[in-house]
Length: 71
Image 1 (cartoon, helix red, strand yellow):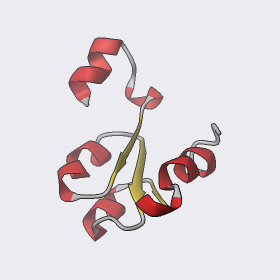
Image 2 (image 1 turned 30 degrees about the vertical axis):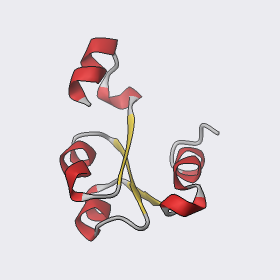
Image 3 (image 1 turned 45 degrees about the vertical axis):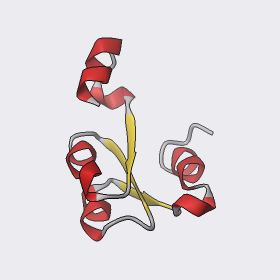
Image 4 (image 1 turned 180 degrees about the vertical axis):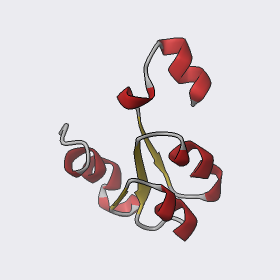
């Protein structure tokens, strides 16, 4: 994520990241706008700034609309 962010010239405050499993933990910990899926691992949810609905309940759309107020 960092390589993509830097190559596109975005700041960390311009990026929202979503995750649900342990491989997402480092990414979620490094971004201000971090969103975990409700059905994700507990440690991942604890690291996130917001917990959204699960994968089967439009969690990404809900997270964008409720946490970031952009949809």
